[in-house]
Image 1 (cartoon, rainbow, N blue to C red):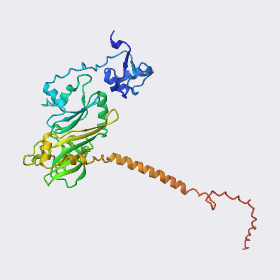
Image 2: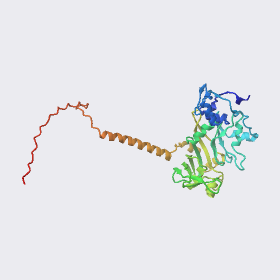
Image 3: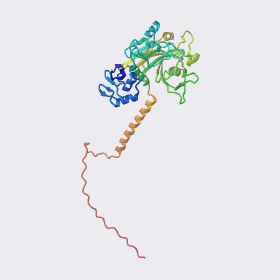
Image 4: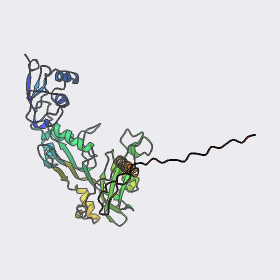
Length: 397
């Protein structure tokens, strides 16, 4: 008799705390379809701590889940998938990137030139190094990405539960990402918001984006702020993307005539400064602020890569100037503004209805002291005798 032929008891792990029951099945018994789960719940065969359960119910850490016969759980130990054998150099590379880590997250400082994920012709990438952090338990997962030539803060989720938690924060735009960049020239407006829709450039296989203000363009919003500048040659800017389009920061800065230094893809030859300035791209994910599953904010800052720091020194920029500037919250989106306008209009109409009702009502009489005055009793009606009307006589013909 196999495990699938008997009733089983599962204890909800901390990583599954708060997830829906149907989601728990998808994680641990994916071979059982939703229709079967619904039937089991409807007939009372699935129980949480002895009580009937619904697929939409959320499980809590330590609860006992009764599962009827059918299906085998997906292994969650390190035998779930074969671990990639990493070399000593790869293990050292992975460990060197770590800024901080705990039971839910690993925060890395990704170096420039290392891809986040693999692809055609890309064999060295961060995702391929994550087995270095999976000695026991599930393999860590990527929850967001950085371009290959962009350095800085990269968040890795340790467990499926924390991956779902962080992914929801990124999707809901509650995570705040702050980038530092060096751009060619100095923007005339020192603090601005770029709102230019983006789309994939035809003929590039999706590898390049462009500004597209037709119906095909996807909304993209970037806040930029000039921190310092070196004459008219270059400027140091702080960037905050309020949307997550591919290459968004690079396309937006090039679109306003100030490409990121070293970004030949979107700035062409104009993106490279003369002299001994590095030709590498000067775009760095400096800081990430995001809610942690334990309820506290996760606030991570990544030091600059060597080439970026060297250029900053050559141009006379002081990193402390960037830290002194407070990071402004994102301005309200068009949808938020529209919703606020509707709420204001609704409240205005409600108040106006009250005014209209008040106009039709007579004010209650008050005495000299301002107290409500009692209405005086009306005198009894006296019948009025009317004089008989005159009868008009007809004249004789």
